[in-house]
Length: 295
Image 1 (cartoon, rainbow, N blue to C red):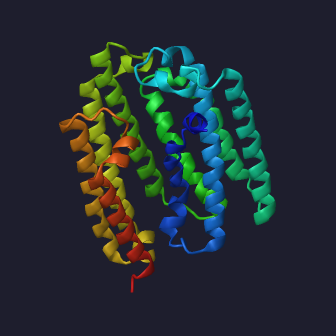
Image 2 (cartoon, rainbow, N blue to C red; image 1 turned 30 degrees about the vertical axis):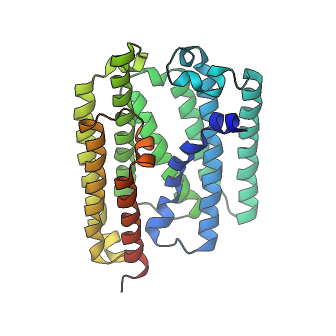
């Protein structure tokens, strides 16, 4: 069973928590109906993401088998056969379609916008898998757009409007994650002597500059989000001070990446770094206090 979980990359489902962003920032986290819709969005998006991962691994079997780490993936190692992967892929797509129709009937609302977002995510990643992941800059932009689509999906299924600053923040934050991952791949490539086509358009110096710019933009976007009139009206003005936790988390991430030269993906850094984890928990707690105890 473990090999199938690895094939689905269950640990990457944490990225799909972005579908809860509209619900969280709207202050409706205790609304059971909206929470149920967000949970449905999370499940549907997670199944779609797993289908994309399977397709990507299937397409990269030969290249992954020569990579020091990726050769351990279920398809590259042979732990899961090609026919099994295809069957699971088809099953995930079928389950996703069925869940969309079920959610539409259960919640008694039109979900065509939500379905369009899921479809757009899948088509975009098809293009990424077979071509665009080899095009520098475009590759990380598509990864970032994937996170924006997650937020939009959460907004469409719940009917919650999303701040423009929140959308821009999501895009830039995802760029930070994507650039950080590319930087780690560049460092590993210098050691192993192996690389992939997309990395030809990057070097460590460019990645460091792009990472610093993206982090700066992310902090500015979050700052503008907290100062926007709708946020100031909805929450207590003290929400501005949550910027402190955001700045610290980004600085810690940059320290791990640029000072200690951590080459693992940003997701793994978040999973392992206690400082970032505690900071994120404090940020969530501070924001919840602003939402539910603003008086």
